[in-house]
Image (cartoon, rainbow, N blue to C red; front, side, top):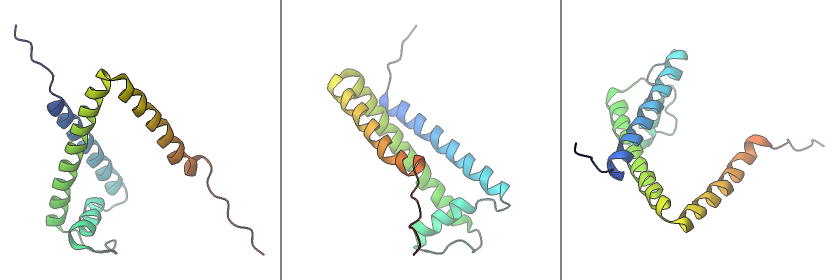
Length: 125
């Protein structure tokens, strides 16, 4: 039996595309539930491709949705590949692994603060 080696690029691409599909499904479910299918990729595509800063109330443009979908897939694929490469390097290097761990803890602390303790409104005079 032939044993195939692991490819970080292949695994990262597959992981990234699975993440993209999951996120696209989430967009679709949320948009259908609000009665406006494809609204989210339409809005994001108009912001990216047309520079439209107020894209909310316009009609759905299939070309923009398709273009955003391609960008979405490519970006998730790239991020998946990068994360797979970093993970593979961290498995082999203890210093990198500990640095990533500390970085993730610090990032979590900074990013969770607004969620865990929202700002109180300023007292009115």
